[in-house]
Amino acid sequence: MKEHHVWRLIRHARQDARDHLAAAGDRHSCLPTVFTWTVLSFLDRSLQDRPLADVIAFQQLLIRIHRRAYRWDLWLAFGIALGGADEDRFDDCICWLILQGRRTFARVLVDPDVLAGMEVDPAEVAGSSRLDTLTHEVLIPGMGESLSWWQEKWLDDVVGSILPIGPPPGAPPGQDLAAARRRFPKLVARHLPAEQAELGGPLIRHHFPAGQVR
Image 1 (cartoon, rainbow, N blue to C red):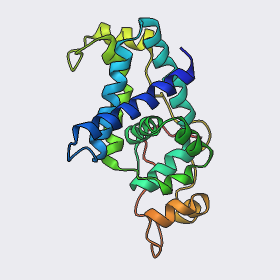
Image 2 (image 1 turned 120 degrees about the horizontal axis):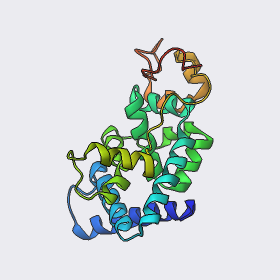
Image 3 (image 1 turned 90 degrees about the vertical axis):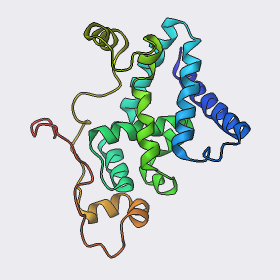
Image 4 (image 1 turned 90 degrees about the horizontal axis):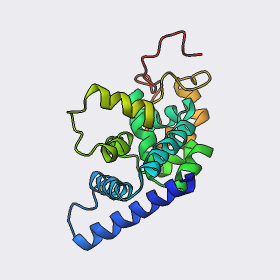
């Protein structure tokens, strides 16, 4: 499996989800959480039909894709859009961005300010977190909360974990309002009141030791 296969599976899952919800005529189908859940369900179904080697390759490629978006500037951009983001929420944001498809993912990585033209719904972002463990669920069906320690270790050692250890590379950006406005003028114009003199709190929240963040 190559990276373009990963993006193809995501594209097909999005199309299948749209077709399924349109055919179902569910009055709740327009809700972002329903669409995200349906996309992930079709992606799960596609992986179920793949050989073991492909499932593991999918996870490893997904980790590489996720790492490309694990950047301070993107963290700040999502923090502006959502009113702040800690490590867990930023991970969910990257999963959400991956599920938007290859073209959108690439556009946002080139210029995170284009998020100003997108609906970054908190519920949809939170619902995207299942992408973290989707491959694990395929390999160990029904794992739920009953995963044993040796299963967790096997999954981490053999398959890998999407969640990075430690902060993104480089120094975190300034989080004052003036710096945010210079860096992401469209996002600030959309999500922060024009009359606001300063940020109400940090847009990037993390628990990395001081020595790790440089």
